Each structure stands twice: as structure tokens, then as C-alpha cells.
Amino acid sequence: MRAVFDYVRVVADSDSSILITGETGTGKELIANLIHQASHRRSRSFVPVSCAIFAETLIESELFGHERGAFTGAIKDRPGRFEAAEGGTIFLDDVDDVPMSVQVKLLRVLQNRVVERVGGSRTIPVDVRSITGTKRDLKHLVAEGKFREDLFYRLNVIPITLPPLRERRDDIPLLADYFLKRFYAHREQEARPLSPGVLQAFMRYPWPGNVRELENACERIAQTCTCDTVKIGCVPVSVLFHHAAEDVAPLLETDTHPSSVSLEDRLKDVEQGLITWALKVAGGNKSKAAELLQIKRSTLGDRIRKLGLPDAPAADEAAARGATAD
Image (cartoon, rainbow, N blue to C red; front, side, top):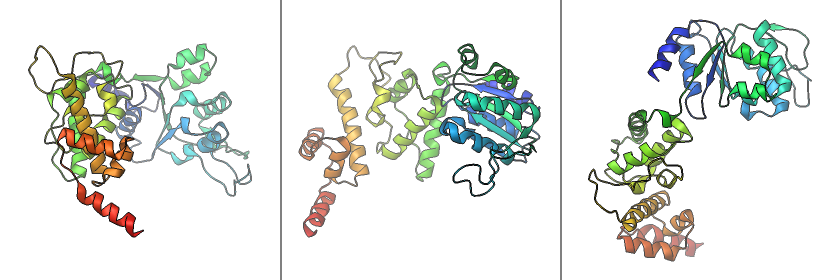
């Protein structure tokens, strides 16, 4: 990543097209924005566009704009995203999802630096630096006939490849610490440190959603963890028991390595964390907590007693009184 950032500083101030390749969640938009902020266009707009969210019938209008009456619902002229980025930078993420029918028009805009709105006949000049992002190898799509070769070469003037999080595991503790501090700060609380077992789980998990998934996991922990130290039971189950985890050793909450580990204790940690989370979200109402956990209320009560968790009768009694009054 240091090499990526060094390269960004070198290429930022040119006007050449940049193609950023990386899996979902690796931070392509973040890098595109960094390039914009380091360029001479920093005082103008940075316009990010996810090409994957628009239907084929809408993407042309979103990118290039439309004239009044161009189609049903077009009640007035509307500039597109290229015009909105005038003088600045447009970031077209998921460019691999742009349909073939739009690719030829996109190529014309990038080559001639003019747009023609849907339903219009006049050409509008645009001064825009284009950065595109793709989660798939465009060369393979070109070979499969799913992406125009001439457009690929127009986009791929300066390529940047972002490595997935599993290939830069040393970043995981640093990113987790950053995200936890940020989310706990939103709650006006001190960040809880990660236990050795949780850090081990984070380091062995492949993070298919990359940095975005790690960020979401840290946000969930900040919202649900009630411990002084983040324990195994506070971690999303998907992270703990992922089938593709590269390290199959049991998760430990200490730095020691005993000859055996109690499966019952590990499961108890997870169960305790989930029940504590459900009760917190439900405001102590066990009926609502049971719904969140998709178990019977009586089963939840039995597990709370078995785990020795503090009961929350006040909220349940208040809810019962409210139901009786109704």
C-alpha cells in the first residue's frame, strides 16, 4: 500500500485516464478521491458514480444527461454526471458493469471530450479527468467479448492495482484499531481493546469484503460489545467460523497455548455475546430479544440462567403491563 500511495503522488497531477483494479471493498473510491485531492483539479468537483446500480435504460441518462421530453418522465433538461464534474474529476466505479450499448458512447466522450444528452442533438464540451474502477479483469472481459477493446485501452492509460486485505494482513490490526476508535468516539466512549483471541480471528479470516467488511465488523462490535475488552463472543459469527479461514487452530482468549481447548467454553463465549447483544438492542425486553435470536422466549430465559447473565425483568414487566393495558 505504501507503493500505491507513492505512485498516486506521482500520477495525481496529470490529466491521463486512470484505471483502478481491485476487489469490492479495497478502497477504489478512496484512492480516486486521493488522486483528485492531490491534483490541480482539487478545487473543483469530485463526482463518484457506481455504474452497477443503474439499469441499462438509465445509465446513459445518468452519465450524459437528457433533454426535456426524451422519454416518459423527462419533464425538464437534466445535465449528467460528466457535466456535473466539469473542471474536476469523475470516478466511474464498476465500469465492468457498463453495458456494451453505452460503452461506445462512453468511448466517444473520453476521446472527444464532448457529451450529447439523451434526446438532444447538440454537443456539450466537458473538461473532466476520468478515473475508473473495476472489480474484474477487463482484459478477460475483452477476450470474452464483453468489453470493448478500444475502450479498455482508453481507460487503462495509468493502471493501479489494489491488493485485497488478505494479502496485506499486517494492516488488519492497524485498521481495526482505527475503526474501533472512530466508532466508539461517535458514542463518546473509549475504544475497547481487542483480546488476543479476537485479534487471532481477525488475522486468519480471509475478509472477502476487504476493508469495507472489516469496517462493518468493527462498527457492529462498537454497537454491541459491553465488555471491557472485546472478546470472542462479541465478534460476528461469520468471522469466527468462516469455512475458508486459513488457520484452523482454535481461537484462544489468552497468549498461552494449552494442550487442549474446551469447545463448550468457546461456544459459551459466542452464545453469551449474542444474547447480550440481543438484550441490549431490545432494551432488556426478553420477548423482543428472543425474536431477534429466532428462539422461543422460554429458551432464552433458560440460556440466560445457564450462562449466569444478569436478568432484565423490569423491561419485560413494563412490556407485559403495556400489553395488558392494550
